Amino acid sequence: MKKYLFLLILTAILILPTYHLADASENSSELYYDLSVDSFNLQPEGFNDFFNEYFISTHTPHHNGYDRIYNSTDSQIIEGKFQYGDIRKDLEGEWVSIYLWSFSDEEPTWTQIGRQKTDSDGRISYTISEDQILGNGLHLIKLHVEGDATFANMFINVIDQGEKFVVFDIDGTLTTDDFESVKEYADEFFSETYRAEMYTSANEVVDYYVEQGYSIIYLTARPYWLSEVSQRWLVDNSFPHGTLHTYPGATFTEDAAGYKENYLSDVLSSGGMIDFAYGNALTDIEAYFSVGLNRDRIFIIGENAGIEGTTPVNNYPDHLMTLIEN
Image (cartoon, rainbow, N blue to C red; front, side, top):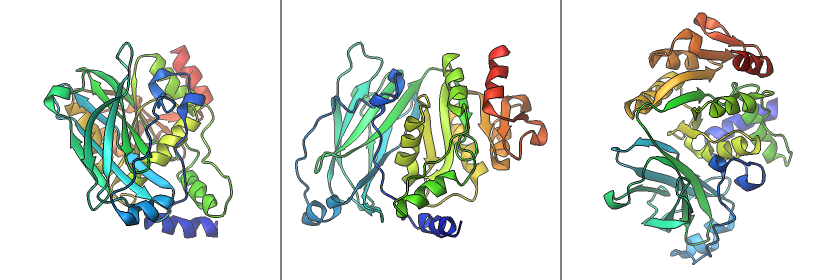
């Protein structure tokens, strides 16, 4: 445990292991979690800056795009951050091309909708023009670094009024405890192969709701630089597609309840409806109560199961059977 505690401190100062985003095309038959990697084959064009070309880009890329939920009247903004290496050096002053793949199209193709240069923090924030505004449905965005042809994935879900969501926390709710991800990150430093353990049948429970017509939100207090890693874990464990939202700060938030409440309030303001929510922590319960969920629609697993009248989940296989039978 000493090495895990030591490395938990390291993650707080943004030192992370090396990861690559998994290609979902090999382990997901559902269209809605298809990252369409095979059809995206752009070539590197070289960097503007000498230091970026010969030093920064020689390290492993860690790029993050941030999933968004909008309605048809919202301003649609695409955001991404681009970094390299274990110390997460920002990619500054380089061009990123923005490509769109709309799953609702009969014959979707990659279409470039914009281009922006990264700022001094390695970020882009691109507002989609009115003549290119995305219609209702699910859209995959690839943020393509022109210099070396690396990229980040993000999804935009443009929803109808009244679209129904089920919310899932990740750490300690889908994983077996709050520190599974820390163990995974720690072992990478020692060239080991530990992978965060999923609760048995957790992915099947999420699948159940998708089959009932619900959209999914994966809402985690992990900081923004874990978006790529979190998406990879969901894909590798065969979870269905959902909007993944991470905390926008650089460290783990001390106000997880407030952060989650604010995000869920934004979803409601966009016209979404939250029918059920899953968590494990008291902060999850607080956030879910704050947006108006009744106790019988809040499912809690772990040591806080059933606290404050919430619905306890002893294990997911039994819970899934209860859902199916009811």
